[in-house]
Amino acid sequence: MLIPLLQGFSERQARVFLMLGATVVRHKSEALQTLLDADIAQATDALAATLETASRGIVYEHQPASVPAARLTAELKAAVAEMTQGAGSGVERDAAGALRRLELAAKSTSQRDPHSTQLRDLLHRMLAPPPGTGGQEAATPAPPASPLIIP
Image (cartoon, rainbow, N blue to C red):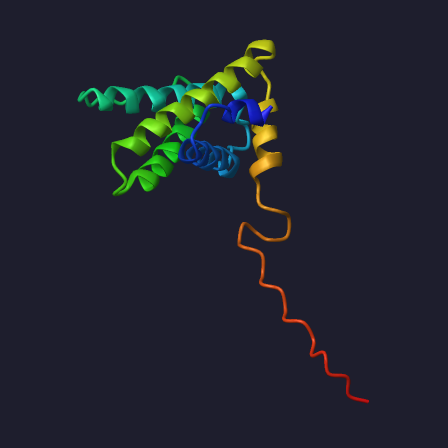
């Protein structure tokens, strides 16, 4: 399911897509408000619309309807701001395209089941750091033992 979402993307667009997907994975849901695919669709739609509107020279911030989507939108916005820092409008266009792909995928799963978490679960399986690393880079392996054998 993830490969078709990346089809037609340049390398930079695919990287932006995966970075935004990783942001969705790192998002911490509230105890009583689980992040659903419908929330992902709302959040990505709102931020993509904001970026597209800004590219036309109009400053207007679109808002999602649900509270979990609004929280995710804030995290995605921070991730896009970090990516575009000093990079220019090309990365913003790539981010808008990647957000639209995430929105399309989230809408397709949430239309079948309004309480679906299929996309969120897929992103978690594919983009979450391996268990035991705590999100940090894996430790560098120890150098091999000396090949010299001492009796």
